[in-house]
Image 1 (cartoon, rainbow, N blue to C red):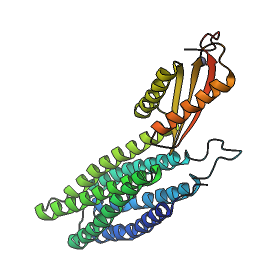
Image 2: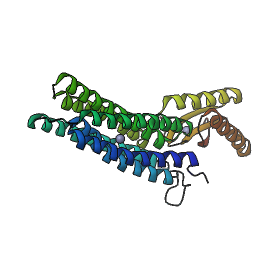
Image 3: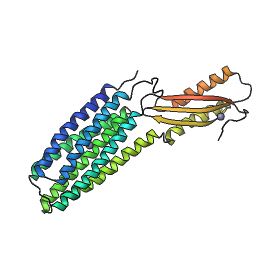
Image 4: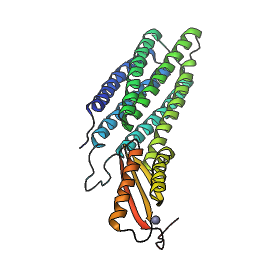
Length: 297
Ligand SMILES: [Zn+2]
Ligand SMILES: [Zn+2]
């Protein structure tokens, strides 16, 4: 049975520990400065820790083998995890906009800008290193969960950088409205990031087609059929986390013995599997070219 690799578990625990550290650093920055932008960054850390906890849980479930309740395995939890992360990120974005507008209307009092900026810069640098590491690990391990978490952490670098920029501008020009303005801009960025994460998750849950994988599979099948003088149709493909599921109909001339047809079909399945970059679960349906057709398109 495949389980989450040690690197994956380590990456996730590291992300969770860093998240807790960020929670402390960014709330400190907010309480010290009273800045709306620092508040936006701090509020996001609460959502952040919740999201990473869910992701860490998913990582433990995702590799469970198929069982009598889940015949296709547990891969799809990866999409739930990243979907929930995206929704939480978007929620944070909305609250930040609301709070920034409140701040702006009720008057802005900034203090201890230097200390706040130092805290935020430290947070941003730590997150930048972590985010790059997570995205790389996600690509290496083909892990939707790690990639989504890495992208999220990198988006947080921008909100911290934005808060620093806003505070610096406010301090330099004496115009305090730069602070809530930057908070709103980074919230718009957060909303965009969150919606992209959700979009990707929905694609996964809905088995949205992947033309790149489909081309690989159909090329392999077309070549096989050209060699063997067979035809195929109804090729279907869907992805589930790290696995690909494929089925197709292979059409044989009338009177081919079932043993022979089955051997060819098995070869076809193997060739298609070899053409794909991930583990593929392939099923072929055997039929005669002249069979009175069933529900064909
Ligand atoms: Zn975050
Ligand atoms: Zn058919």
